[in-house]
Image (cartoon, rainbow over all chains, first blue to last red):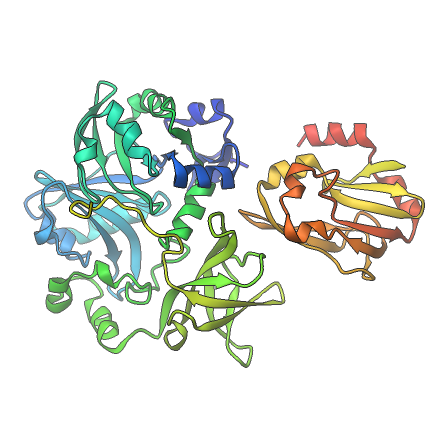
Length: 370
Length: 123
């Protein structure tokens, strides 16, 4: 149920008019589902789903020291990041723990950074504390954020904003959509091809209405967003990632760029370098679970003696595989695909196997890869 | 044959000294897509208000409580293969289990369909 204390987002009335069930999420009233999570999940994999992710924090990091400042808290090689390109990165603390995960885009003289809704206030405070004086941080509260995801997203969006079909995965640009200037990137959180659209809040309803009027498109709630990202093997901050977990433990070593791991100069570098060289003690893995019963976040990984050696951080039922899947932290020795894992949930033992992620293949539109 | 309802959104259809138990259409709608149901084995004794089954939707696991005391006669075998019957036909093919009533006077405190409808509408 949604809480009367919750902040409403620009599309609140639009969701309700479309029959969404609203829930409290990160202090916002958000749509959890419209017609049903499994139907919405499958629709997104087959056609195109429209997600309202306006709770996420859209930040501008500007000023002559912006690149250097961001590199002090992110392990990304921003010097290599070209105009209009996105990079997945991690905001780190001095112990190498993950403060948040984010997308950073070089956009002219500034960086456009999208952070999680539940963590944005903490991120802003942390960035203000850590960024040098010459860096200006702006939280764009007047922008809504929509995601259009699925194999037919490009057909639907091309009709309304010609030129978007030219974008490759993890690139973005300014486009005109329904008479407004919007920022569109080819990116998302479902494993499918698709786009994220930053639109002025005052125009959000008109744009959502126009997108949802396309025959390929249906609105999709947070429930399917979560089940889609789990199938895609993408971690969710606050569940699969937290401030006690390093990028190496989280199997996000790809986000630590080559130059940065050699040179350092970012928060948490010593521990991260050590874990790259020596290997982490535990690692995030995907699990397929025997039977049909899902294991959920909080289920415990046990060893042969029944002692706790890890935990499930996300779990659910894969609509595409029609089987329970999960993400868990397991001892490094048990992290190879095929390793047998035992879990306990509500006094019941479950057998699982480490599975390669993603569980369902990504279908990103990578330029050059036909 | 009489059908009673609980405030936990279960229905119980009584035929002689046996009864069939399931969750209501309102409950399945609240839970959303059901992907697994854990049912009690035949012969198990259940007590009124005690855990009898677990229903897993895409989102979460929820306990289903026994509406009355009794002994499980049969869990619904169809739910193992097709738990979505609880969504599509909650008060028919999507039944959870049959039990033998231990104390039929416990039925007196339950709601009839009109009372339940008013109760569900107020939720």
